[in-house]
Figure 1 (cartoon, helix red, strand yellow):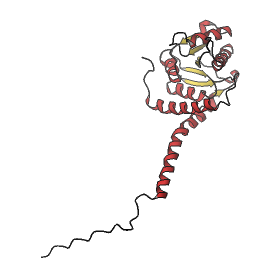
Figure 2 (spheres, helix red, strand yellow):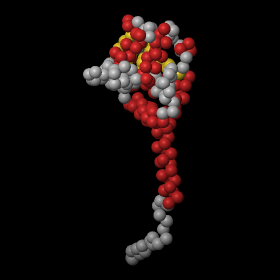
Figure 3 (tube, helix red, strand yellow):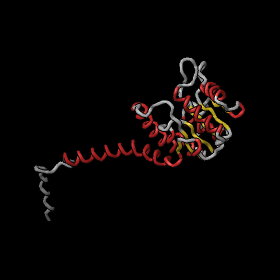
Figure 4 (cartoon, one colour):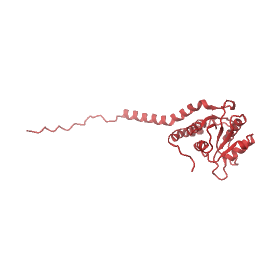
Length: 222
């Protein structure tokens, strides 16, 4: 009995490549669109999500327990930067209008000769906020730390995040995710709307905050 004859080798002449150029271009385009969506999608959602709780007039802000004022740098002479000065002024207006009972000054006070909360409190007192209503947090080195510490160390549960409008979506979302019912208030005396670099940097920060808050739960201090 004879065995079955071996099949002749299959010719590969004229075989189509597994990935054609059009298919490769389509895959690259899809990857680019996915990357763009991952970059731009979260910030757009955060801006939309916070739109209904951001205010630019003190009378419209619903009363809350605390105003959280986020640090924004000091001048060489140790006084608040223009942006930070606007935030402090906005918080003073909220307090004087009876919208908040206390003001939490949260900034970087960890560097010798650079004490944001102390400088913030000094301006607030000069604008009529009593020192007894001011709480200082020298560990608020960034937005996450400010919100986390406000909740865990200072017992804040309802707050007005006081910052510029470009920063409020991130501040509101961060505080909300960490357990603080939050609305936002901005009052711009210093023009910054045309600062493209500022906007671009905040876009990246918004995206980073989104992903960070999906995985980060622990305290932000030692």
